[in-house]
Image 1 (tube, chains in turn brown, orange):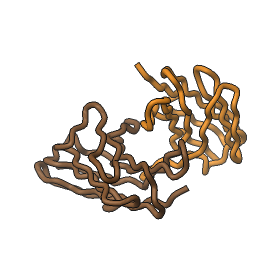
Image 2 (image 1 turned 180 degrees about the vertical axis):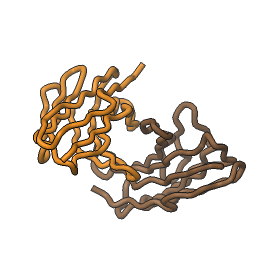
Image 3 (image 1 turned 120 degrees about the vertical axis):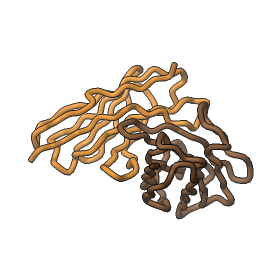
Length: 113
Length: 110
């Protein structure tokens, strides 16, 4: 498995601002992912964070709204830009530490006022 | 369209009362089916991966099985600490993406 940490664990932000969420894993991994879990709903993949190249976004998610960085094999950031109350969610990073198995971080609970 | 449906949405059991959670899926080219447990305020915790029909995996009081259309998570003699939301997800051959169901909220009463 892998030990994954996220910062911040939670935040309350004002409409129109941006928040950057960090994800750190304790070992080098090729695949890192960002998911969103809206209130009362299940998880939806936002994008795959690729090391050394641009992230790959799922349908409905765009780079301008959710820019992602992946500077090395143990770290990634997700920025939620120009936030609105609809962005209030839990944001989770996951890694594929062993083939075909994704492990999740503890999540960042975001509330937008 | 790829789809994962979990039932029931919520389940209340008495301690020791065994039951099963269902995950039915419609996906072309299944690579694997995954079960996770999620406690309030935490990220999903990996439980099992199943790859082919007929496969079974066990961990303590939990046993996961897979057919061509659905998976079951059997809970034998549950304890209050088994209370959590159980999530099912599928992964297609062509993608790393996990497609999640909406989960089953399990409450085990002492």
